[in-house]
Length: 465
Image (cartoon, rainbow, N blue to C red; front, side, top):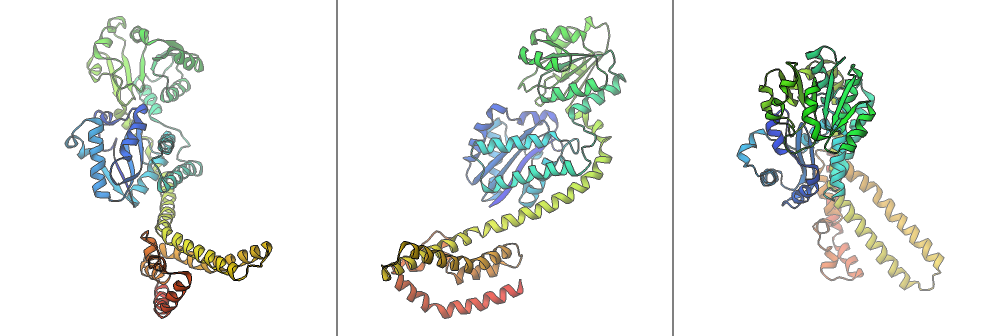
């Protein structure tokens, strides 16, 4: 099994490209189902935010599956891969694991250390779990990534001075106006991003907030939290004449305002400047709006300059998280290695259980007068002997799984216990020949010398490892 991530983010693609590959929230279950049906994809998770679209998958052939995932993207969005291939990055195995840990911890975000991405990664994972497209690998990996991210923010100072895209938007407005005092702010959208923006605005002196939302009741509920005023989308254009600052963040798949609509109210503003920030992906505001006189339009990519000023202190804290990530990578690698020998352990336990049950059945035939209590005691004691005999070999096998030179010993282990066929899903040698239990015992006895020789080889391999 291999882990692969294929994606694009703010580093590899501008907003006009990223918005073309944004999954609509309501379409994600269908997208996950279609992706899971792709040949050789065993598990999958889609992480989509305003700054990234990433497809994580557990696959059996990474190269071919990377090609298949590109095909899925091409088919889902109806865009030829030649138009987006150069924007994609592909990471495999330990590099994919490291990337997920960095994403969840906020180290790969536009604003290093931001916490919103953690919730987005968690939601993406929980949806994939709900749609039953994850398994043992991603159930372990994503839970570990989420736990790591929580610990990173609680044990370091990377989020001591909270910043986010909405915070950066407010900071940009302060650079334009100096102060939000006596300024009218129009928020388009009543989602989480708008709520964060409203909090920052109020903290920086904005005394008049207007909230426009497609669902008026939600706009009222939102506005009440900040002593603001709610308007319907029908009143959006007239509200532009009153506003000094417009910040738009909706989940719309199309434009909310176009150039002509904004141009139609400019004469009512009497040359007052209109500052507009579009922090939605796909974008809410027509890029042509920025060409109008006295209108200053910025999109999410323009916030990068604000982000830069916050990086120095956060990078110092990020170094601590990098060390935490390295340790978590090692832990996950050990778990994956142990998982590789799980079939061997399972085969050994299955075989020992069968031999124990056959032995008990033979014993009961020879001693038919045993009481229920005696049978129970004998069963418990003999089972204990089997378990104690297996305990050390299983512990050592797990250790060998994490030893770079342990594969030879693992192979010898499977030969000594005659587990090669069991690992392949085939019956043991005794069963495939149709032997009885006594015949199997004779067969096992005839192989004793070979097993002893293999045992000596195993001992030598263990000593070398």
